[in-house]
Image (cartoon, one colour):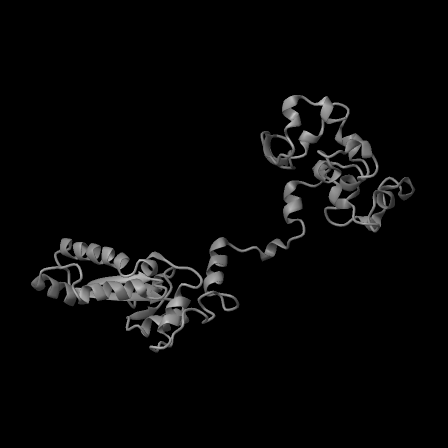
Length: 292
């Protein structure tokens, strides 16, 4: 019945979720004219003509069943749908006239208030309240902190747990180690080894030449993972894989000092076992630059 009363364009709209910035929609104490509030207008499409929020949402899903059909539902359209749960919390028990003008006090806690649940007043609970109302915001922490913990945290850090890259290599286990290196994810230095490193090997040589063959020529790789890039670059220099003339190559080989800065003990151990020079340090800390 409701769909028949709507225009052809509106009939094709089944769901929409919008957050509107409405200038001056509701101003808090101390805010001047033009203050802005984010308002959830996702349910506004539910109402048209005789079908209004005041008529359909005062109660629960069974109070005005004529409001709901296959397209519209109490749960999607009414802001107070989250108030009712089984037989414990019902509109009759919480908002019935026998409970007085403020309803049953035993029903109200936090964002669940008489105004929100009984009157379906959408301003009683903003979309921000819904999202974080039950969360202890003191536990929030910055993205960079989470990123650091996910990689290096003592409890669940991917690199700090020691469960990264098999460190004992024997001829019989070499293929197993190679498989494990690619088990979780891979990177270009590993997937395109040794060719990816040769690109950097040539780039470093050009930089060294343009710096008048500076000696020593120090290169620091921060967070080297398995050490594959470092190993391949130094191998490129040792074996002159880019074909530099011998006299220049010998000077280039003598000048290069390649160091890895690594904060993960497990990875640093793996890198050192490959014969690479490693210093402990955190690229985010200025004091870590002193050893290199």
